[in-house]
Image (cartoon, rainbow, N blue to C red; front, side):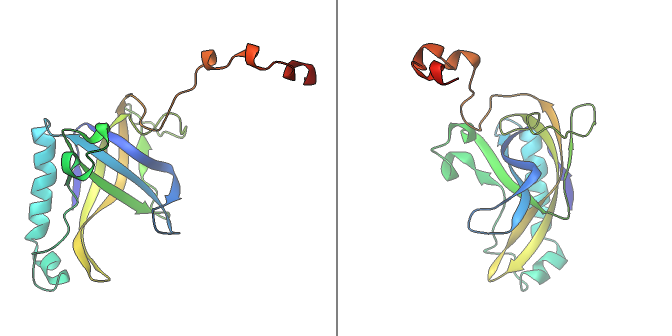
Amino acid sequence: MKITTGLVRLSFAHLLTPAAMMGSDVEKYSASFIIPKSDKKGVAIIENAIEAMKNDKDAIAKWGGKNTGIRIPLRDGDTDRPEDAAYADSYFLNANANVDHKPRVLNRDMVEIADPDEIYSGCWVQAVLSIFPYNSNGNKGIGVGLLGVRKIKDGDSLGGTVVSDSDFDDSLLGDAEDLL
């Protein structure tokens, strides 16, 4: 089942180059999408897709005939990530794609993005995702596949500290100037 989000904030973005996920050596394209709780329409799209999947006869069959006790991908940032201010008053979900299924990464004008500095954790995007049932190694639930991301606008970077020209200070080089 394919869904398109409203405006969401991108976090833990690995969209142009795959990266190994925590606890694994397998590289994947991945991202976390932060959905403001105030986006009632966007939240409803995701909740309705999850509910439809929970009631899908093929999904229920995959889960052994029961849709109880399954893992749900939509999580509450206030309870699941209380230490991270970027997730406050928001929901979030994580999505990924195998290396042989690279997601489309576009700008607002639908032009492919190739520059990693243009798409980053903290910018605001619209995502196209797939929702699917899984039953693997005793874990049952609803997974989220990463199909594409469209950058809509810039936002404050979540990826760490920005270094500006004024952070460098020649007066601290001392005798190092003689080495040049």
